[in-house]
Length: 103
Image (cartoon, rainbow, N blue to C red; front, top):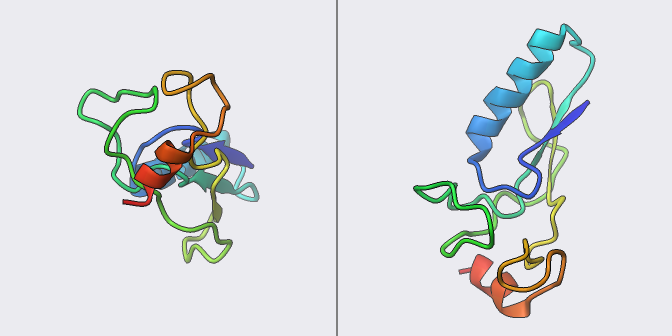
């Protein structure tokens, strides 16, 4: 299968459509999609800022019960609160950033 939206902020619906379209193009109906929803609860910023942007929220909780054929799971692949390299070094857990995602 494929994973989409990893370490990104795009809306779940957009990523589901994209992932399923990739599988259709690959002509691999037995494959599935997993979507990283760890930080996409507010969607992307207006300018698609990617480095620890402000105002982002947690997305859907991890689950294998997506209710969408071909979508195997919503996962938190990137740990919420893990910096992209601007708020702290890439991969460093920042408690304040994690807390802001819950707001």
